[in-house]
Amino acid sequence: MQIEPVEGKDELSLLKCFFDQYHYLGWSGIVGENVKYMIWDYKQNPLACLLFGAAAWACSNRDQFIGWDARTRKTNIHLITNNTRFLILPWVKVRYLASHILSQIIRRISKDWYDKYGHPVYLLETFVEARRFQGISYQASNWVYVGKTQGRGRNDRHHNSSQVTIKDIYLYPLVRNFREVLMKNE
Image (cartoon, rainbow, N blue to C red; front, side, top):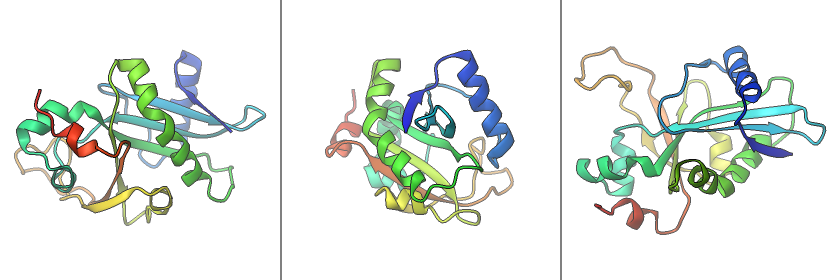
């Protein structure tokens, strides 16, 4: 298995196509810093793809887990990334592949992020629709369940839009002293 950051136009087109065709959320574009991955087998057949992008601006359970107040979050939010899409292609049937991929990504994402943006990330987050998925791959990869979202979307800053699906929140610290690093006010 090979994990490759997506860099070229052809790979990006393939990734977009896979998400559009096979991921229940589709492809909605990218805003801000992000790292995209394609996973290939030894014959260069595609197995899976992932997208890591901007962390949720505010997430009370995550912020409490870290110990953030609003000011510290604003200063350090760029040091977290959100696994916004994870897709194992529908024809791929390999037991434990998802947790294996996650464990491999965990080992390399901070360096990949640094190489692309000049700063590392110290914490990964993801949101799992509990009505659709159980989060088993994240649990098997030692991600920490920290609670549920409040059912508000990214654009609901004034608490007046309709409810969105409540999701389970999982986090993965990439370094032991992640709280210390994420609490710095520089």
